[in-house]
Length: 368
Image 1 (cartoon, rainbow, N blue to C red):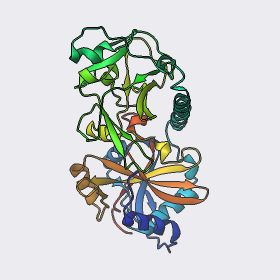
Image 2 (image 1 turned 135 degrees about the vertical axis):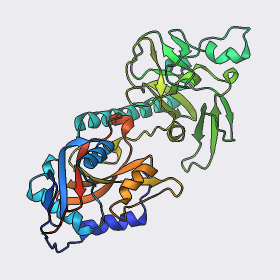
Image 3 (image 1 turned 45 degrees about the vertical axis):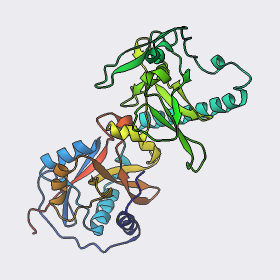
Image 4 (image 1 turned 180 degrees about the vertical axis):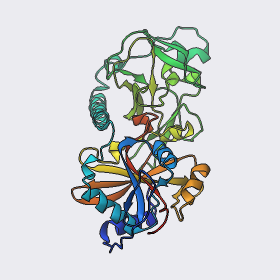
C-alpha cells in the first residue's frame, strides 16, 4: 500500500482523538438531503462504486463530502450512531470477497508446501514427478521455433482474443487445479531489461542480489512464454511463483478445454498494462468492520502524493484533471472510527468496483 503522507496521518489521528463542541445551526436543504448540524447530507445505504457514488451525488445536486472541518466528521459519525445507521453499512458481495481472499491464502500455502517438497526431492526424483515436462525436441529444427516445439501434448499455441496480446497458450483438455505446468525457461542475466517476458529472481531476503530470466527470444525459451497477463481474477487461472531460484506456473482452478492460460505478470508489468492487482481484504477488515465512503482523493502522478480538497469546487475540478481516484472511507469497529484510503480493487471486484454505502453533501440553500 502506498505510504500515506504526514498530512493524512495527522488528519486521521486528529479526527479519531479530538472531541469538538458542536454549534448546531438550522439550515435549509434540498429535497432528499438531511439537515445535520450546519450541513446538508444524504445517506445512501445501498453500496455503490466510487465512480457511481460521485455520479449519484452530482445528479442529486451535490457532491461527495467536502472534508474541510474536523467537526463535520464528528457530526456525521454522531448522526449515524443516533439514527442506527452504523450496522447498515454493509460491503456489497462481502462473502464472495472473503471467500476469494481465503482462496489466495490456500493457494499460497499449497505453493509453499510444493516448493519445500521440490527442494527436498528434486535431486532424487525425475522432473515429470514435479511438473509437466517440455515436449521432446526433434533432432533438427528451426531455432526460432524452439519455444512452440516444447509445448506438451494436450496444449497448443494460438491467437489470443486479448487486444494486442499476440499468441497465447491454450489447453485442449481439462486441467486439474494445482497442476504445475512447468518451469519457465529463458536466458539468465544480471542486467534489467524492458522485456515483458522477463522475471526477476531475488537471491537474498534483502533483495540486494538478483538476476533475470528473460524469455523474449523464442529460440532460448519454452512454451510458457506464451502465457499472457490476466486482467482480472476471473480470467486468471495460472499462478506464477519462484522456488529455488526458478519460476513455475501452476493452475489456480480447474481449467476447461479450449481455454487460454492467463497469469498475473507482477506489479510493474501490471502498471504498464493499466492493471492493479490488490484485494480489498488485504487492507480492509471485511469481517467485522463497517464502512461508508465519504469522499475521494485524486492522485498527483508527478509528485506521487495526495491532493486534498481546499474548497468546495476543487473536487469537481480534480475529476476532470485526474483519471485515477482513490476513495476516502470512514470505518467503524468496536466503538472506534478511523479514516482509511480506498484503493483500486477492480481486479477482484470487477469493473463495478468496491461497493459500499456513501454520503453526499450540498451547500445549504440559506440559513434560517
